[in-house]
Image (cartoon, rainbow, N blue to C red; front, side, top):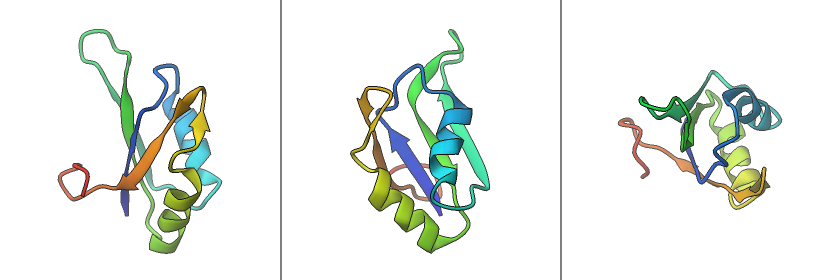
Length: 84
């Protein structure tokens, strides 16, 4: 299941994002969206978790949690990477 994570602190790294979700199960892919000009985080990313039960657990546990001073939003993303 592909998850969309919004409202990330601009200082959050891809490694930190992966580690956060690995606490809830296997992470197949983790992508932090970066600004093409500055190279800095745009404040959102995607995590792919192959096991639906683990992904649902991560959504329930992490949605609206404070991470690095920002209250993140976690939800299922559709195939195009847009929120459903």
